[in-house]
Amino acid sequence: MMVGNLALAQATDNTPIGTWTNEDKEAKFEIYKCGNKLCGKIVWLKEPLREGKPKLDKSNPDKNLQNRPILGLVFMQNFSFDGNNKWDDGTIYDPKSGKTYSCYMKVLGKDKMEVKGYIGISLIGRTQNWTRVN
Image (cartoon, rainbow, N blue to C red; front, side):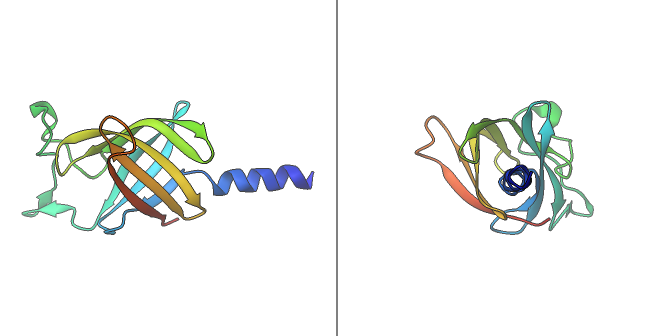
């Protein structure tokens, strides 16, 4: 009985589900289940307004999406568990550039996660370390 509870606790500690912040602490992101995959949305911005109005997705290459607010934006999609505390085969959208990248998330500890966006192979790309905020 005790072993089962320990396994459950370890599984909980090693999940990316929860709220995270990036290295710059300019935003907070909620990672959550979407079907049998994981997704992420922007739930807090240090500077949510531009000229007194909510920041919009102005850099999006799709003109039809340029008026959607950044706050609440689902910007991470389709992550599947890949073993060894890693969720892979997802995409991450960068509202600053309007570009979408392949991405993986790897939980490094209870409150630390590596998030890497890349084009092509995962050896080349940009890595950030995120910190759990709750």
